[in-house]
Length: 445
Image (cartoon, rainbow, N blue to C red; front, side, top):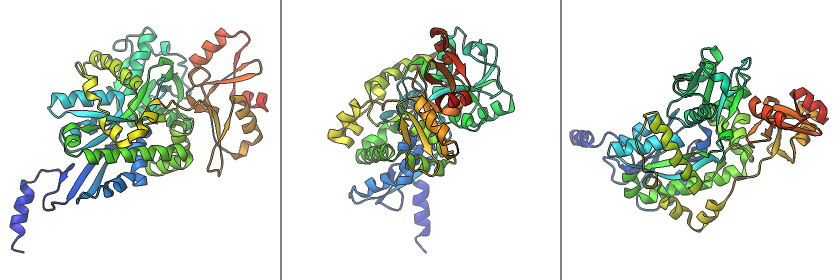
C-alpha cells in the first residue's frame, strides 16, 4: 500500500497513450494501436477480417522477443480521424483510401510526424470502388443532369475525387456547377433517402448497400474514369523505425488474411457481415471471388502512379499542397515480411470478371461464363437465389443482377451499372435496346 503514491506519480509522468511503446509500470508489455474502418470493407484485410481472424496477435506472439504484445483496435467511419490520431502519436498503424492517404502524408509532414504507405488492401484498376447514386424514383439519368443539383459527398475522400473528375469530363465545374454537400457517408445516405440531396457520391460499401436496400440506384460507375483507386495501410515513421518487427508482423498477418479471403470468399463475407452489420450479399459484391475489389498487399507501381495523379485534385480543392508521393511510399517492410513471395504478388493481376450466383443455404457461389447463362439459371431457380451478380459489359464492375440496366442485342443480354453507359452501348449498336430485368429473365429462360 505504501508504494501507491510512487506508482501514481510514475503513471502521471508516462505518456497519455502507449501506442507502440512499453507501458508504464510494465517493462515487458507493448500496446500496438491499429486504426481501421470496419464498414469500409476494402480495408478488411487490415481491419475487420484481420481482427476477427486473430492473425496479427498470433504473429506478435511468435516474435519471442521477451515482450507481451496487446493490440488496441480502434474503429472509425472515415480516414480523417485516423490521420488525426496518427499525427498525435495515438495510432501506430491505420488503413484508408487513396485520397485520405495523401492527406495523411501531407498532415504528417506538416506536423513533423511523418507517415508512410506500407501496403495496399483492396483496389480496382478502373476506379469501380466509387459510385454516384440517386434515389430510386429520380429522373436524373446522366452526369449532365447533375448541373445545378445538390450532391452529397465527403470532401477529401476518393468518392469526392471521382465526383470531381466525372463532372469535369461532363463539362461541369465541380465547384460552381453543383451544390456540393460535405457530409459523412451515413449522413449523406440519410439525406438521399430523405430527399434533401439529389445524388450521393460515396465509396465502398455505401452505394452497393443503398442499392441493395432499394434506397438508391446507380447514376455513374466510377470505373468509367478508368483510373485506379485503392485503399492502403499507413504507419507512423517513428513507429516503423522503432518497431520494424511489429510492423512486419502486421504485414504478414495482413497477407494471411488476404489469402483467407481469396480461399474462402463466402465465409469471409459472412464474417465481415457479422462484425459490421452489413448484409453479406453487399460485402460479397465488393469482396467476393470476382468482386469489385481485388485484395493484394503488394504496392504496385500502377497504384503509385495513380496516387501521384490524385495530388492535383486535392491541391485544386486546397486540401493539400504538393506531396512527395515517392517519399511517402515505403514498401521495404512488406517486401521483407513477405520475402520471396512478394514478387509473385506484385505481378499478380485481378481475377477475370464473371457472373456469379449465391444460392440460398450455400457456402459457395456458382460462376457462369456469360450473363445470359446466369439469367437462365436464375430463371429456373427463382426461389433459391440469395444473390446474383453480373459484370458491367463495358467496365467490368460487378453489380446486382436485379439492379442492373439490361440491354438486349440480338441473342446477347448485357448488363450495365449505370443508364448512361447502357445508352452509349445502344447508340453504338443498331438493333440493341434496353429491357427490364423481368424481360431479360424471360428471354434467357
